[in-house]
Image (cartoon, rainbow, N blue to C red):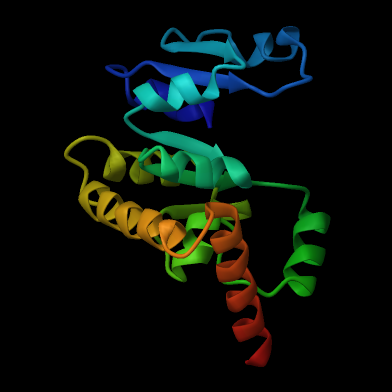
Length: 171
């Protein structure tokens, strides 16, 4: 993900440090990255000021969507783990916003698709003036409406994911 930084020299990238990971872990990756800094335990403050984000899969993707930040979902695991999971879990998407909306709201770059070239292109589409930004913002509004209707966001998210899973197993 850091490989995109040199392609966007006018932007400042901020890496949200994972809890429990020592700061020294990040040092080798940050060498030569002039427009990158690291924050610790300030993810929500960071999101509230972000123009766009590169996010690993999980609840962070839904949180990023609820903050209204256009994003690219990035995931790459070991080849063996990926192929096992792909055979066991039959879903169209891994990002929670995409699962809830049952469409690709945000780009998912998974495994071999997670390349510098694809990241640069996808990020370029979601920054200010990017071709996908307005549609993402519209879809995020619809996502928030879905989550607000009829109860708590967590209940609605669980209901939508359950509904999707039931539908996908029928096929």
